[in-house]
Image 1 (cartoon, one colour):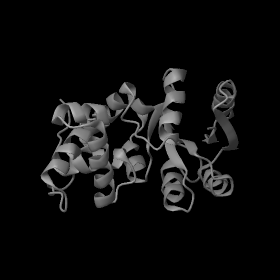
Image 2 (image 1 turned 90 degrees about the vertical axis):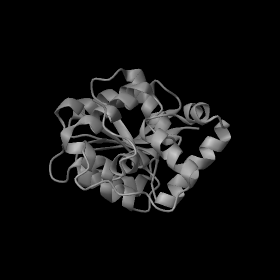
Image 3 (image 1 turned 45 degrees about the vertical axis):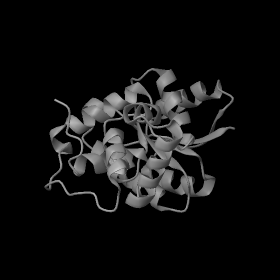
Image 4 (image 1 turned 30 degrees about the vertical axis):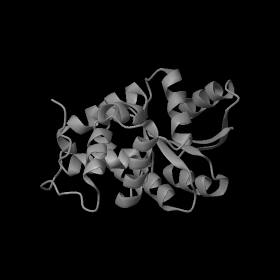
Length: 220
């Protein structure tokens, strides 16, 4: 199955480089390029890609607002944010806007391509080890700390609360199954029910919920 990709970055060299790299992989197809956030929103609606690789800092409409509009729109496209993580203070905003995960511009090419495939498959970017590290870094930043007192998560079972805590720690379904002595299929079912009950788009949003509920604390 070919993954259809829209590249959104105001730097032509970045877009060109990603296009050339992806052209060498038959399961990846770049269907469009955007140099601004507004153009990314328009093309996402017209082309209906599987994944939008989105830069945050673009002229006019930035990547966060573009992500919010794309994920709130009729397209099923998932957004993979492309950023210089150490310099970007908008990670939390991008997560809240509906981004499914992050790749950084200096990551290994194999990791970037793997991230695209994971997002396209509808899974979480918490699976690759590198993304777990990025999410942990995000959670540890002062600006990522909950601004309000932790609120209890309502409407879930105690077992689902345990699963949500483990998801917040970046555990995969297999690891959750091992930790709770259940099958992988059962772990996956618990995660699916959590997504439905909490109205979360994906596991990244479950991570946010776990942190804001105080189920998981930022690493020190």
